[in-house]
Length: 154
Image (cartoon, rainbow, N blue to C red; front, top):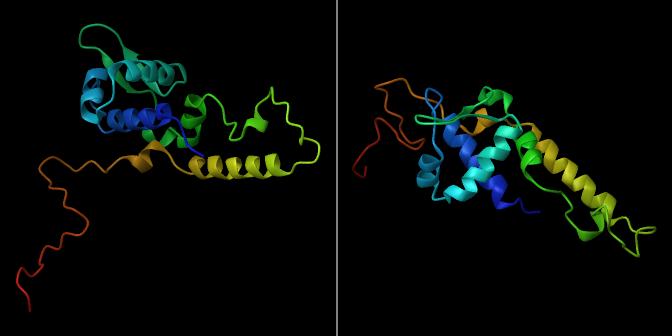
């Protein structure tokens, strides 16, 4: 299974906006930060706003912010609102004319795998993707940093 670029960009956009909770973010800013076309981000922003994940403010000084706290924005729900369909194989499409439909068990297996995938995504929220915000003046160190690490060989 492969999610579309729209889902990838939607997650990046939500993560960026979620990392800046005290201000409005602009499409140009997100596009520059993540090397994504502004035209793509405009479509995605519109779709995320229609789904209720983003609030947008028009005009000079406008931008976007999260419409809900990050812990209330489920990853599975975001993916469902962005992806056009989940027909992982052609025979799952509503207009399929598969000749094996009456005796094939593949569709049930594929649907089960998709349900497992979505249930797994449903366990996480946007808050799980955001780095903790350090208080002003605090330095965030990499996980492998050791304060008292020896700089010379023993």
